[in-house]
Image 1: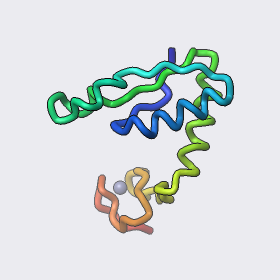
Image 2 (image 1 turned 135 degrees about the horizontal axis):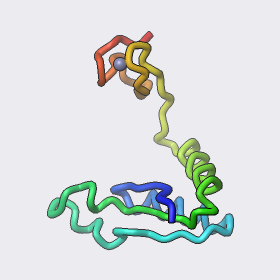
Image 3 (image 1 turned 135 degrees about the vertical axis):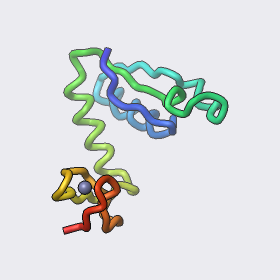
Length: 102
Ligand SMILES: [Zn+2]
C-alpha cells in the first residue's frame, strides 16, 4: 500500500476517497476514528491517512493534485531565491530564511 495523503481534516480525505473510487481505485483509510481525539494525543498521530494499492500510486497522485488545484482555498506559491522554499503568495517574506519576495 502507498500513502497518498494525510490530513487532520477527515472531510478532505473523504473528498479524495470519492474521487479515487470514481476512477475505480480502491483505497484504505487509517486513523479515521482517531480524529475525534484531537487534543488528547499528538496531532500528527490523528491525521487521517489514505492509502491505495501500489499499482495505483501514480494515478492516485495525479487525482490528488488535480483535486488540490481546484480547491477554493488553494493559493499560488512563490519560490524563495535564497533557500528555494515555496512560500504562499500572501507572505512577502520567506518564513525559512526571511528573504524578501523577489
Ligand atoms: Zn528562503
